[in-house]
Length: 219
Length: 378
Image (tube, rainbow over all chains, first blue to last red; front, side, top):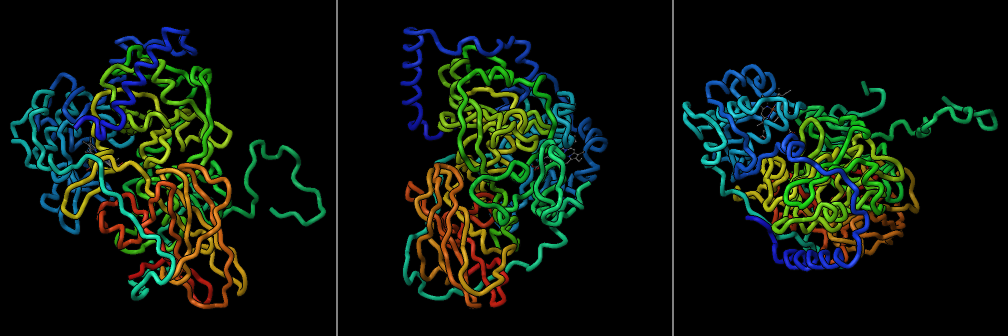
C-alpha cells in the first residue's frame, strides 16, 4: 500500500539524503534558521487528521443511539430525515450493488473503503462549512450511527479508536493503486476513418436557465 | 457609461485597482445551477472563448472550493510543517519570502473538466466543456526547500496538505510530486486571489487541480497516503467493473478549439483564424492537429510561443469558410509522445462513469449559418 512506484523515487531519495548530509557538514546550510520551531503542544492542537487505518483517532467514544439524536439535530436538515439525501446533498446510505451498474450510487455504505475516514471527514467538513466544530464524542456517535444505518454495525455499536479500526467496510477491496493504464490516441493524418463520421449526439442548444454568473445576477 | 471619441474621459485614478472595459461586462466566470450540492461546494468556469494568449486574468481563473472562499489574514497565518521531520517548523508568509523565490507558468485543470460530457454532450459552450482550466504565472518557494529546512526523516513518502477553509480540505501528495511543487503566494504578479487560496496554496504542476490545496496552512509528512474522503469517495475514477482507481493524478494530454466554438460562431464567409488551447500534465505540447471533416483528415496547427511544460499552449490555423457544414476537432500530442484520444479510444481504458479525467477529442459542428454546436461523432 505505502509508496506506489516506490522504485522511482526511493533510490533518488536515499541518494539525496546522503548528499544533503554531506553538504551540511561541508558548509553552513543557507537559509537555516528561517521558521519558528513548533512545540509538541502546538502540533497536537492542529494535528487532527485521521488516516485510513485509524492512525490519529482520538480517545473517547459514541454510540449509535447518541448519533441518531445528533443526526436529527445537526444533519437531517440537509441530508434528509433518513439520510436519503435531499436535493443535491448526498445520501449517506444505500447504493449497495450499484457500483458495477450504469447508475452507480457512491455512498458511505456502497463505496467508502475505510470507516476511520467517515470520522475524519465529519470532523473536518461537517456540518457543511464548519470544520472541527464537533467534539470527538459527537463525531464517534455520528460515525457509529452512519455505519449502523448502512448495515455495517449492530445497533449496540459504540465507535471508538479501537472499534473503528476493526470495522471492515463492504467496498474495502474496491480500490486500485497506481500505476493505471493511460488512454492513447493515434496520430493518423490522411483518410483516418473507414466510415462516417455520423453525428451520434448533440448538446442542447442553449445554456440559458442553467447558466449563471452575469454581474447583474450577483448578490 | 460611454464616451464619444475626442471627449474628456474618466479622471486618472478613478479606479484605484482597475477594471475591464464596461463593454466587457459579459466576460465573467459562470456556474451551473444544479451541478454540485451547494453554493459552498461548487465550481465557477473560466470564459475560455473570450481569452487570448495563454494567461488567465486573475479575476477569471476558474474557481472550485469545497466550503466557500475564506478571507484569511496573512498577518495571523502560518504554514505548519510537522510529522516525519527532524524540525517541525511554522513559516509566516514573510518567512517564506526570505527563501529563494521562483516563478513558473503552469495550468491548473480540475479533474472534473469536461466531466459533464462523458456520456453524451450536454454543455453547448466551451466555458462549460473545458472552463475548469486556467493558467497563470505562479510565484512562490519550492516545497523541497521548505522540507529541507525541516529535515525529512527516513520513511517520508507522502504528505498531507490541509487547507484552512471550512472543509479543512485535505489531500495526500506522493513524494514523486514534491520536487516540482511550489508553495505559491502570488499569481500573475500579485498576491493570490482569495478564490485561489490567499495567502498560500500548493502548486503541483501537471497534477489534477484538486491536489493544489488552497489556503494551505499545514503539511504533515508521513509514510502512507491518508486516503481522505477527497481521494477515495471523490477524485477516484470508478470503472465499469465497479472498482475505482486511486491517485489518477496526472492531467493527460488535451486540447480544445476556442475559436470558433459555440460562443463564437462564424459571422462572415472568407478567411478565418482557428485558435485554441492545448496542454499536458506530462510536459510540453509537441503538436496539435486540426480536422475540419470529423477526423477523416488532419493538418498540423501552428503552435504559438512560448511552449512551456505543463502550461497552456496556444495554437492557430487559418482557414476559409464558404458556408459549408464542418466538423472541427483538435488533437494534441505531448513531448512524451502521448496522443489525445477520441472518445472511443478513451473508453477502451476508461469508463464513462468515472466522472474525472475526460481528455477526449471534442467536436464542434459548424452549421451552414455559422452557428457552432457541441456534438459527439460515431
